[in-house]
Picture 1 (cartoon, rainbow, N blue to C red):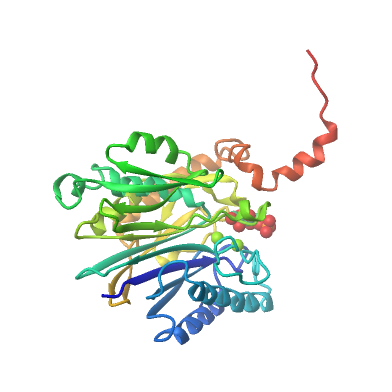
Picture 2 (cartoon, protein in one colour):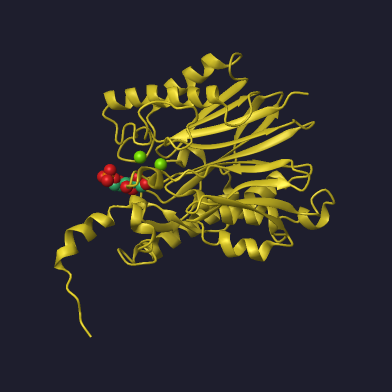
Length: 365
Ligand code: F6R
Ligand code: MG
Ligand code: MG
């Protein structure tokens, strides 16, 4: 049986007003270009946006890191950039860091999460898409979903999950990776993933090597060497029958968690789960938010989406996120609302430091 690949590739190629949302003309164009490839390069496709990020969801049989699939996404972003420039949208083409496509969109600006798997009898997949935060934002949730029995009772009572999961963690600074087996190595793993600006969960696997989750780990600012917006990550999680159930996968989003991003990519703020109709960043350019689309995959076809956070069950976390936003906003330019100096390295702060350089004098002993 042939395997199905799910590729989620995203980029911010312009928005309105400011960095708040993608323009419908960009969405229309992306939809049309993807549709043209259905039955050819693609089996199926879907497009959406979260805040100012244009999200391409594609299914096919070509595996992960496929040159043609990545080129298709790149070409869609180029076409959409053209429209964004004509409309003078804000930040037109901002995530397109390279001049020309060179085989894989990784390292060129767009964010990528992909997975290839043999379809089960029925295969539910949850696709998470975020704006105004960074890839490490998923760490907390992936830990809760795949390693915390207080979130996922299936880890305790479902024999098919009882042995736990394997986490692949990437060190984005040293460019190295490691596998942690949980539950037995949970404490060691937490020592790293609790620092999400550097250590990021890239994949989660079942013990037999079956893929369970995949995230985007591209960090734009590190690629560009200057501030070009946050990295606004995406994540794919498989659910049910040997994986956490759909409800266990989305349950941790009922906890209001502070993540890095928000205004100028330089502030901690609450990560708010919202339905698509609220996937627009306004207050203080945020707050950071996440949408989740649920699909059934049927021979590569995307059955859905279901807008998972469009549910009164998530009203309370949204309210608590707003309360947290008020509390932390009151701190203005002070840490920990503003990110630590180390994390500000890729923002506009180095410019201030440069301007003040000659004014600093030694204190002396
Ligand atoms: C956050 C983001 C915005 C901008 C802010 C300033 O990821 O994109 O908060 O950083 O609106 O934008 P510029 O510098 O373009 O005026
Ligand atoms: Mg933007
Ligand atoms: Mg964005």
